[in-house]
Amino acid sequence: MRLAPMIALAVLGLPLATAASAQRAADLAPIDVTVAVGEIGPGWVKKQVGEEGVTFVCETDACGGRGVVGIGQARPSPDYVKEVVADPDKTMKSYRYATEESMRPTGCTFKSFDVRRLGERRIQYESLGSCPQGTAAAMTTIFDADRSGMMSVQILTKSEADAVKLRDASVGKIVAALDAPRSDR
View (cartoon, rainbow, N blue to C red):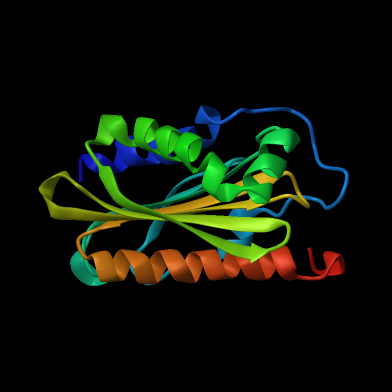
């Protein structure tokens, strides 16, 4: 699958498209998305693991179609995270631009962008789209003001329904880790 390396780079590069900063939140420690998500399902093989995330690749139809999953995390500036959480509709334009620019090399485009509030200090952007050769794309990015961080999950596979199901399961694991008591991390 030729898109896999390009998608992995785009997913891990998305956080760089936002206002990056070395500042850390004093409130809560960040979670490790690689640990939080663990394994994602039969047939999905970890191909790239790093400090900023993990990439899984499916090379067989056993996964519901060949595909790639990128799960990453980044530290945008605390002010940017606060702005996104305070008014996600206002910051949607910059988020959408960063997402579209990061995906441009892959040929993938998103057809929808939605906002969900997960609490007073956490929001989630969701997007659905398509890629060349009939591949479906599903992406979610969570901004958490308590950690001044963002976590993203991006799925590309043959079926949009499978992409959404896998994305939502991975996001559920991340949200559970964010909500877990500090002693559990």
